[in-house]
Amino acid sequence: MKRYALTLAALAFAAAAHAQVTVKDPWVRATVPQQKATGAFMQLTATKEARLVSAASPVAGVVEIHEMTMVDNVMKMRALPSGLELPAGKAVDLKPGGYHVMLMDLKGQVKEGDVVPVTLVVEGKDGKKETLEIKATARPLNTAARTDPSQGGAHGAMKH
Image (cartoon, rainbow, N blue to C red; front, side):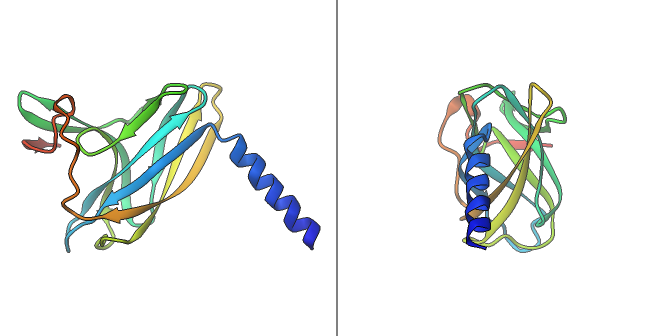
């Protein structure tokens, strides 16, 4: 039995050592009662060129990869159905006011401190897919984007 546990631990370590994408600082924005959507944010770094192709979470009926941009002083959000490019060796920030994972049709309120499971699917240039299971902690509703004019900040009207 002990040998079996060691083998499993070695396999888990080997799988982690060969992961093509690492996730740093995952979090979701807490919601108010009856709110039906929120965002998940994190930093993704791929060792080889890859693409974030899909995401899922048991707390939401629909999960999509989105981009927010400022156009004519109006914040616009759009789904990225073909996914998000992850260039080799370059950190890609998923943050308020930019790229993010959109959790929609929420099954309940996400409260500050809740831990939300999110599954990310990444596809390499070779077509191989990697599934990442992450745990994102809910931060306060008023957690805002850093003031970055190139990202449009967190102000303005939003069109979906």
